[in-house]
Picture (cartoon, rainbow, N blue to C red):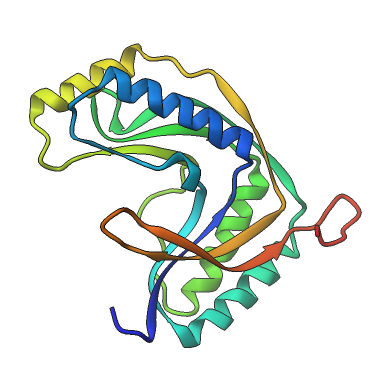
Length: 202
């Protein structure tokens, strides 16, 4: 990656209470899956990604910021519900372990507006439909079939109820720097949504 290009994504943040609850779920699963090749996400860094842009030129950052500002100004602050557990591609053959999100149509509209905007800058539409979720962990590509089955069995028997509600008041552009100890996220820009009186949330 050259100095003129940075790795970025667009996301909304979660409150500390939800992050702590996600951390407890993650810890319980790790206790049930010792010595299993799962890369667990640091719960303190969890967020709901709306759009992963990947490498972006510094010249385009200003245009992305304007898109976020424009789309956020059209939407009111909203709440999402968090709870339930699942896996991609399926529970019995997991590769990604996730916690579910129940979101209003406003969130899907916000994401679609952002995706339409960045598509005009040349960033591809995602291949898959947007499924709001929070990634807890990823099973290593080198994991044996036995390990994958073991994770699937644990997930099938493990229940996660309602975790909490997150109020979404802004959408953020983050920089992601990949490091040996894990990714470092730096917030580059925030665009506030509107409140009930159509005022920008401060």
